[in-house]
Length: 178
Image (tube, rainbow, N blue to C red; front, top):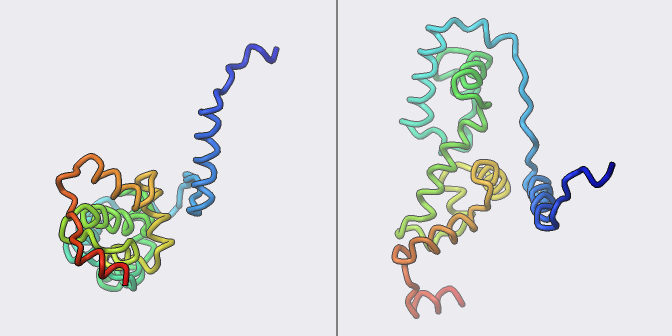
């Protein structure tokens, strides 16, 4: 009987359509779980050691900001291979290498975007500062983590914290119009 199914309100449908459109627009696909055979081949002690080393290089040395720093380069620096790097990142952090690196880039971008000192930066400049190769990759990754665009994130922050927004002087506005 058709009447026994719950009806969707038009606002629910609009949200679903927007979500679908956003996923396509920012080239986001749903995550599929798969089990790689090599994950279980890395012994637990080595996995723990590599996890700490990976965190040290990517986070402490801020290699996530380097656009050219690949899993291959990380493996070379740690004296291992990319399969081990991939296995450790997948098992320990539950994401692939690219997503792992982008997570730190997005976190730093979020800090930069709401910092008074960097409010005049464009999204391209922020993207470049944190290690993204292009604006599209930055937007897609940001949307994947935050479910909103970087611009929306910045605007929402200043709507909730208006005192943190730097007011533009007449001089600054004239420069921007030139």
